[in-house]
Amino acid sequence: MADRVFRSVVCAWLTWASVGCSRPAETTATPPAGAKQGIFGKTTQDIGVFDPQAAQRVSDQKVVVSDPITAPLTAYGPMVERVSIIAVDQAIALFMATEGRYPKDHDEFMEKVIRANNMKLPVLPNGGQYKYDEQAHTLMVVYPNAQGGNAPANGAANAPGNPAGNGSILPGTTPPASPNP
Image 1 (cartoon, one colour):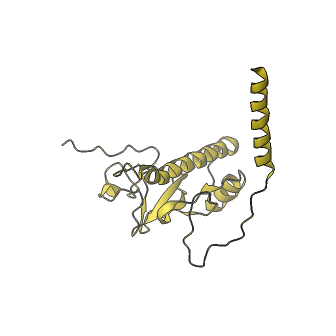
Image 2 (image 1 turned 90 degrees about the horizontal axis):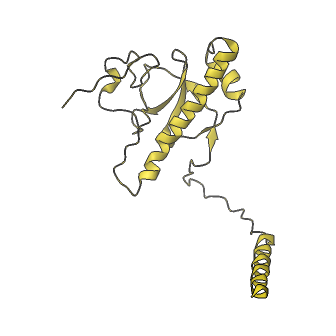
Image 3 (image 1 turned 60 degrees about the vertical axis):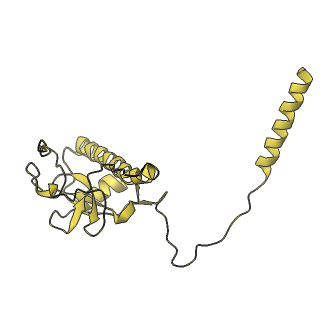
């Protein structure tokens, strides 16, 4: 019986070793011109300056799911946004702790926070862009008004308690109270 177990183990190991030694065929095929490129696995350090008056919608990072089959893909964008914002906010807090102040402008933010920490943020779906809000000292995710994105489209942008009027909740402000039905 022990001999049979030993043979099985040796056969399994030899099979595993022979599969591990073979090299996969290298593919050099390039996607055809005009083919749509995906965003998964791609990163960026492209962060613009946030302008509250610009024609854009600020994401609220809420997952809105209407179809259980596509729910994971629908949740990808808001999850990536939230994780990116948390990472950058932590780097800004570290800058504040070491320097005793926030970055004075977008250039210092890019140099001393993003590039100094070698931060690479995931590319956002649906044309989303990262923007640094110099007044609130935080990272924002915005979508062009024509795009869907995850930003509120119900007029909450100018709700009371939101002095920026951009759909976001700024630090130190409280979210607007929702009316009771």
